[in-house]
Length: 358
Image (cartoon, rainbow, N blue to C red):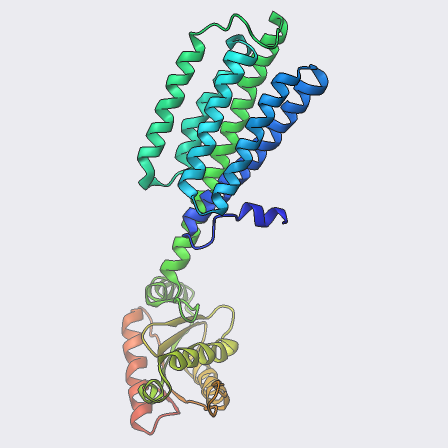
């Protein structure tokens, strides 16, 4: 099993935000397992304390069990297990291995931050319970002296350990906040994409068209450049759905949108604004240029074959209406003019391009 498969354990079937937290939990689990394993070797090889090494190795396996719980689908339980093992481990380190002079119990500060990072907002009960437990255990370790530690350390070593714990805490806080910021940014990008994209065709949706289209139109007016809209609608699309079913109808929309997009330029905005209605906003494009582009689109659409499994393939056609925006004319008004030209194309027999002329 490669590292990516391990990081994705338990993520299947969950939402985007949940998957990010699951992956992050798996990452932190693996890092903690490795660190715990290194400590076990240190206790065994360098300090020559087999008893402490075996106890610590048990905690190493307990951390690794988090991945196993994830694999079984116990996502919330796996996170709770991880933090529970961590808190017990810190208690043993502080009150069994050494003393509170080593500062190991300062790692309890990371539990509330980690819990709020890895659990979802609806799991407030788990967050608060783990945070309260970490505070209680910290106070217990801070105020309880271990008079018979399994590992005897002098004052200088304890001081060095204390400083290292503080330093590691600071590094881990920065690390967690960085991950948290990236997660927020990724979620925002995903939400923005979902809000502005048509889920079927991957094109811009109606909301995105009016938002970006208005900005493009204003820029064209500011630069005194022409601006045109090409509005297209499938011919007899209802009959395609009735004859072949909506799945084939959706396939037809996807296939044809790809054909039209191949004609569009990089600066054009291609959007789906209705069931089978699409629009292309074309900046720095006059009426005649837009007509020529629409004619190429019409021809390409009519020649494209829609493949159907088990049935004879078919082709479909579309009607086009083209309008150009006058100076200081609103996008909505230009779209209405393109719509009038589109209706004229349908009245004249469909599968043709018509211009709006005032």
